[in-house]
Amino acid sequence: MKARTRETGRHSNYSIFALVLFASLLVLARAGQAAAQVTVFTNVRIFDGKGGSLSAPRNVLIRGNKIERISAEAIPTDRMATTTIIDGGGRTLMPGLIDVHWHAMLIRTTPSDLFGGVGYMNFLAADEAKDTLMRGFTTVRDVGGPVFDLKRAIDEGVVEGPRIYPSGAVITVTSGHGDFRTFSDLPRQIGGPLTRGEQIGAFAVADTPDEVRIRAREQLMQGASQIKLTAGGGVSSPFSPIDAVTFTPAEVQAAVEAARNWGTYVTVHAFTSEAIQQAIAAGVKCIEHGFLMDEATAKLMAEKGIWLSTQPLPEEMRTGLPVGSVQREKAEEVWPGIARTYEFARKYKIKTAFGTDVLFQPALARRHGAILTSLTRWYTPAETLIMATSTNGELLTLSGKRNPYPGKLGVVEEGALADLLLVNGDPIANIKLIEDPATNFVVIMKDGKAYKNSLR
Ligand SMILES: [Zn+2]
Image (cartoon, rainbow, N blue to C red; front, side):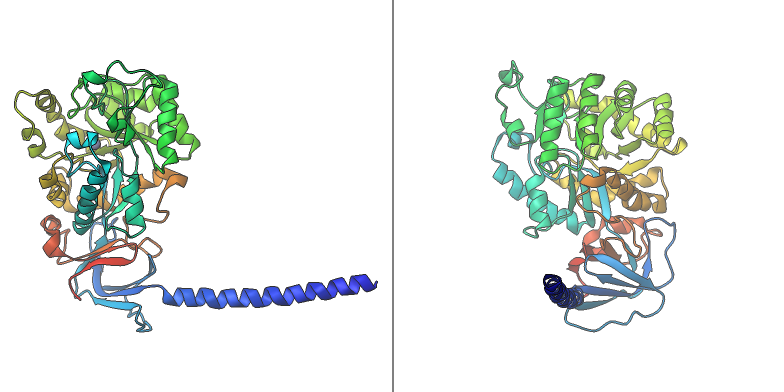
């Protein structure tokens, strides 16, 4: 009996202690909340990333990294040091732009850098990442390159840049698109030493299902949010004919299994109907490019809900290749397919995402916004902007549990991540505004933090 009383007494002591602890935690949590950075945009008209027109004037409250409130009424604030009020002056507030086919490590570099120092590559890429963000692209899906360290440095605030959904090394086969080795690297031995480009994680060669599985899992181990394979030939690599189907069905399936086991997906580079159809049959969720697909394949993609991540590749990409080179010949074969692909995408209502695929051409990267606005050859300005914001944001959710930035991207709505652009004017009425971000994007915010505010 006595022992029991003592025990009850001890319990109530614990209860009081727990209560005090809980209360202190509550106070701390409140204090933490109050200290969160707050930004209020007043008098802005919103393009929400989904609808075809701007809202009436609104006020928008950002707390921490999220959009907390959107209101027609004034939003009262505490005017603390951590609060910033931005008078929008009737400008447009829109979601940050998203590019889902980007190679953050391969813009300023040259192909030969793939065999040099990765430190130098990272410096170039960091500088380019800042410019990417300053062009209003607050998120990119990186579909190949040794990008994990850059992503980490950006996320930690060491350097400025967009959110990165990394694939890591492009996985290819011997002679496939992305195999940048030379004949002196042959013969390849399974389990043998890796070439420099493979060591730094720019690309990975895999010639059996088991090798594909290992390479895919190595990318997942380093934080890949999706896996990228080259399912067919490509323009920029020297030894892959455009018509080639690079992997066997069992090899693609091995990658799909590895990705699926990690809760994410595989996207493949593919031009031809054969390469695309084989990939879809193996469980691939997204096709990059698709420029040479036929009508039946377009229908199949629409029916199965497969994503088409394609690009309005500018002429300079083709004409920049030396006349008479293998790459130029391949480009001539591919280019006419660009318009046809967009026409199929529209006709069959394929889920279509926007990307640019700028590779080794820094001058072209500076025209990032202009590549986006060139979509108006096939889409209205509103459709173009919706694709580069909410639609691209939807594609990113395919990463499931491997999504490095859980939360809504590509929309302006309560609860979404605060990646925002304040634009001088109405980009739906005049989409050309997007082409001059230095002048027209007066505020660029990512994750609730203003990286540019020229109204200060
Ligand atoms: Zn690419």
